[in-house]
Image (cartoon, rainbow, N blue to C red; front, side, top):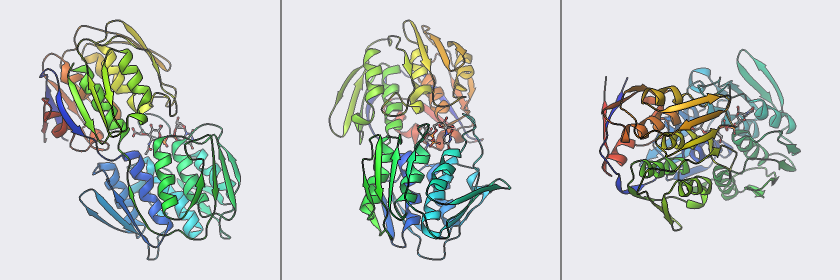
Length: 418
Ligand code: EPZ
């Protein structure tokens, strides 16, 4: 398995162009199932996860073509309604084919994705949505079997808790259900808005996306569209933290500052200087960060996908910070690895208390999940001595050419093929 070798090399300085958002591209690809026309996605990120989704959609008989950062998708043949375990187990977001298959075919057989390192990751809210839209759903042999022979019917759906994926499945299914659907307490992430905008470009009738109440008027068919994937706010946030932790200065191009309010506020409190315009973020830091407390929350709160990265920054802060993880039950796997590098962290339930230290020390560490892996790379940028990060396949799920982008700004990261 590949691993990364990181030598500290002082402040990062330069410009990085942020790629398209993984967590927007994955549902957008599934939206291609809703039409027999061509859906073209520009700014499509070249990642392990988007390639896994590509393979899954091809297994459903969609034809796809990749041309640089443009992906075209077409589902105009006989669609296979079965999303098999060997593909779904690689990536939880595969559950996002459930709504489109039901809307297009009236039937779907999707393997339960299974949990992952950060939590059990149930899909009960996805199933609740489909049942509310009139589908008959049962679980058998590890698969979700759903049928709506007479098609889906609009309904009023209240989410008991906020779910990004279940909101995305609801948007896609309700777009072609008979009548009106109202979603109450939906997710408000930028990726939800991006999916809704793409569905509207395909002919869907959606209002209120990004708010606490989304209304959808179902239509009989959707047509093709050309849609640009929004920039990846989590990649941008990870690089902003890289600038702060190395006391450097980075300009992030193709980045929407308004998608990162909570992080940029926390970084400013930590002492960073931040300047933004409509398409870029400039962040610089002159000294050790101050300790800042954060609590992860659904958007627009502090994103859980930036919790591990921000914790790394707090490991060398002047003072003690409290980091509360409220979204996933087990998203502190980076803690023992950071402690191997000299971090002083105490975890009690969903709260990590981080006592900042002068400096971390390099060590061999192991990535356990996507965002834990980037937090270890960030630590390696400033730790005294060499750091090696194993199981880097976790990192490749969500970061495109990470070491290339950081090395161009002064980092010293090499990928060792074992
Ligand atoms: C999306 O996952 C993202 N993935 C995650 O990013 C992100 O961490 C998460 O949203 C929260 O922002 C993609 O968009 C592909 P949820 P999703 O449904 O949709 C519970 C990354 O690093 N829940 O909002 O799976 C769930 O267990 C990844 O890029 C249920 O209980 O997240 C969790 O505790 C990691 N039942 C909470 O809700 C359900 O049916 C939020 O999950 C669904 C979810």
